[in-house]
Length: 73
Image 1 (cartoon, rainbow, N blue to C red):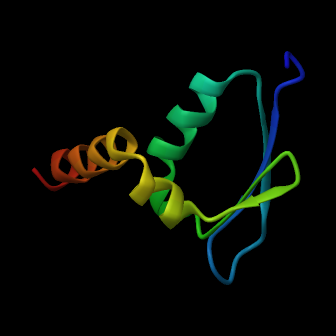
Image 2 (cartoon, rainbow, N blue to C red):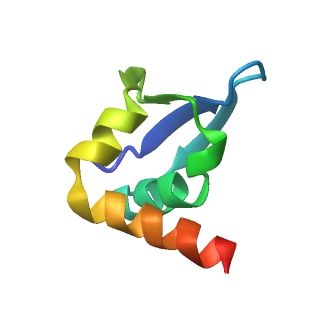
């Protein structure tokens, strides 16, 4: 469990990027911060449907919406 998370992410029509994060909190913070830059997401070689993940998780969805509102103002 202490091995960390290898994340591969990409925006459409761009090169995939790779990042290593040590714990779950960092993964969530990364997803919140770079939500607009992620169209493809793979965590430890498992492809994640980002939209389904966000829509199924009410707290994550609310945080991302609040971040977008704060960026507008």
